[in-house]
Image (cartoon, rainbow, N blue to C red; front, top):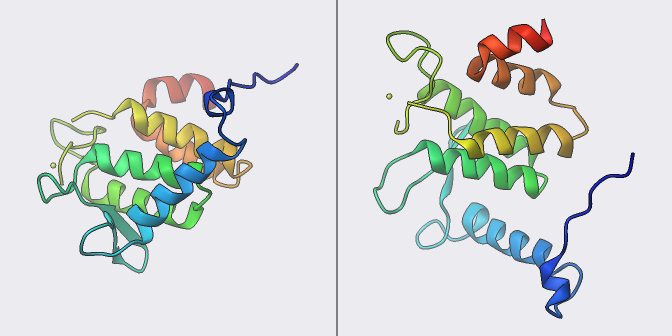
Length: 151
């Protein structure tokens, strides 16, 4: 079966074949590795966790964390993805109470679509080396479906 290849509209507009990849790498460099005062939004919380700051509200939100994981998957940074995931699981996941199984939108209700895209992209990008992580993510978010398809 032939894999679908999406159009590269930058190439169609006359830019080089790697223009989109270069834009993404430039954005990653600034937002994840740039000056912590006026560029960077990703910070280490500890040796094994990192978070994305919502600069408009000066806090941590699920959208930023999921976009951060998505960008790390697109730019091939599996270690940082894992650090962001650990922070998300520890500080945004509700392990008990009325919202058990859901993620808080702010650092205490629902999983965002971009989370799923980031996890799916990650599984493919790193040749399923994070299969156990992917299974864990699915089991946390979609327990009824997980039981049907994976157990």
